[in-house]
Length: 235
Image (cartoon, rainbow, N blue to C red; front, side, top):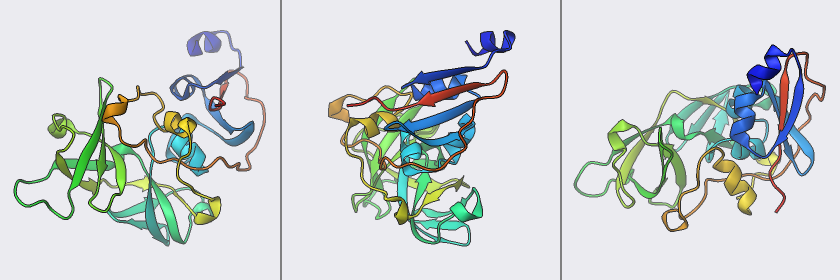
């Protein structure tokens, strides 16, 4: 469809609930929540630099970890990450840092006494080319991580150690009204583009955020450009 439109030198606006389709087809994506536009940007920007917690959790799998931000660096429990985006969008002080599953390095925990740093695998999600693991720390913190080739045989109940790659990401200040997910809309958004694991293999969906709006430029797509709007289904 994208190539047909390009060959015809036509612009188009598509409305869809399929986040994967939007990221694949569109030159720019408008993410909507309850009829209001949250963000308009290129697909890569929507994924890597979401403006709001809702966009972060609706498009792709998102972990929002507590962090202390100073001078463009967010210090998380797993180490520091570099904040990107406009300086006025980088919070100072307490915040939640966005970490995607691919931001983690995962390895099996060594044999012997359980390390205080070990995380337990509590869910697995297979999609052919990748495996996602939901892991839980001893204090109850949960994150979704991408299993590398060395840990693809890990099963529920196994223990792993996590490290962060060299990450550039965004963080959200408490003033944005970050809250725990409520309802299936957040769950489906956080698992965009991937089949959900069976209920008996999933203890909790990836974290989500609230439905809030952010200002954005609203204009028609230029010639030969596809703009796709994405809005969660109404439940």
